[in-house]
Length: 306
Image (cartoon, rainbow, N blue to C red; front, top):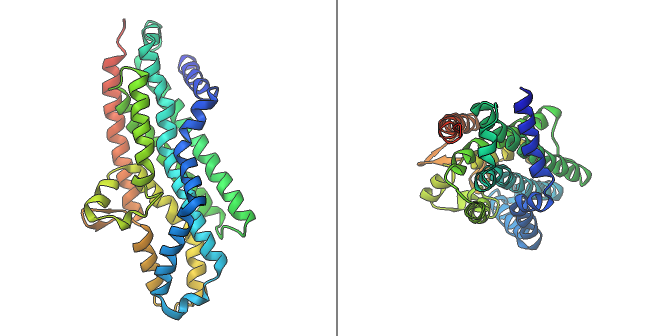
């Protein structure tokens, strides 16, 4: 166990001591924030106003503070969804660098078992992702609370952290299976560039996925990170949605909630079917389990005794 812990600590230090790597791993989240400040906030507010307009005169009963909170939570979930993709990938590039520099030869020559080598990379990346996304969520909660309150109880907050951990761990397993194909750090970096550019669109950080065609929605929702983002959005939105309903007093018979669900992708849609949050979580767990099995098999073949 000491050997495993030592390797895990070594992989963690490689990531956290490389400050530029940390910044670049959060680059997509920072881009989401910048675009939000420039024009995304107005775009989401316009979409929200359009949904509220369909509720008729009842929309005038909704507080402007709740509208602002709704849009800010959209931003926060977009940033976290992006981080759950880019942070574990960035940490896992250590695998490729070790392979390129022949460090994996040295590691494989030690008495450390192969499964411990594999698990140390996985554990370090998962911990890094949980720490960074957890810190991002905590910062977002603090800022939103200071600016008017998040309207959530302790149970909902714990649920949000649990979903973020699930997303970070599942993304790590998936990217472990991808890293096996890269032989150089340059190729891994090139893929990271494409991944960063696509991440914001796939999880709906830039444009709500519901705005896309049915085929594109299905494609986006094939990725577990999208389901995790949807689950986090539902959890963090529960308080403000209750405030919406309280303001209207139930006079719309649930129509506003339905319209917001359709406009802002509160549920993932695959092949024309809308998945409930429990089904999305189950889907993420299945993909994670399959990824772990592939990871164990692939890396057991890679890390042979030299």
